[in-house]
Length: 337
Image 1 (cartoon, rainbow, N blue to C red):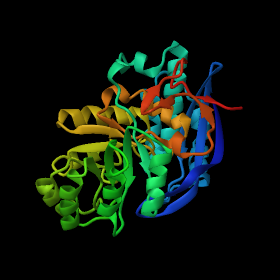
Image 2: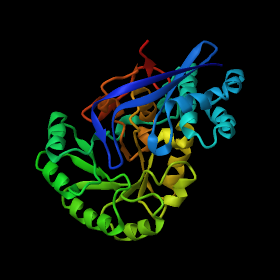
Image 3: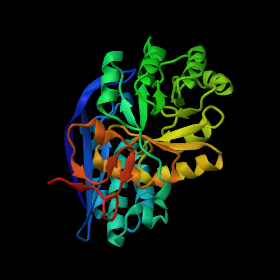
Image 4: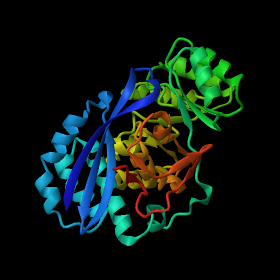
């Protein structure tokens, strides 16, 4: 196979702020695999919380370039299995290769992935749109400037309940909140009660991932469902989240791509847990990959292309929360050259 790597720095429409940091640019890396003249593309991202940078990701992939380029490709699952020992500890790098392999595989068979998997997209969940932390006035403005049926609101401030109270005055849309590990036990229990009265659907990762004892108490007392994010990184984390959260948020970049995500979904369902996939601000390459998992999900947060002012590709489109697939095989993503 041929391997090509394309780094980009994509600007956000607005400064993107969560409880930990703010940023104006999202560095990403697109990987392309070409086999017998057919090209597949995949994406991964820079993320400081997980100590991943695009230069480091390029280095990690290039260390195994000879293995990849000499590889006799058969299926994405086998490719992931054979690559995993080389990239163990760097699922971000493996994600780009895995998505590219699935895109390639779908194109070889002339089918979009959801059809290849025999899935019915007629009842796909709609994506939310994220409102990052800002002044209350600016958060209201962002909401009013972008009418949408579901919003994910980033929290982790001293004004969290005031924020949701004010935003609720301006829309009847579904609210989800994401504290990105910023709350404590009593704060989470107290906030859950207030947020339920404000029409919030669930709380994502209220507390630090390491605080399992605290999460047990919150799980027992929260009046809102709890969805794991930072607590659920790779496939081995699913069982650890059982009894601490009501569901998991799977991010392809963190777990290593589509192949492990499919296994995580299956395991979560066997445990009776809700399943969501999330965004790490990927553009249309990454979002198009997530789209094919939609028939398997309860919730999805795949608004990266909506938050970014720039995009590397065409592919899926989003209209008032609905995801519209590209009429192409594989993931449907196509790089703008």
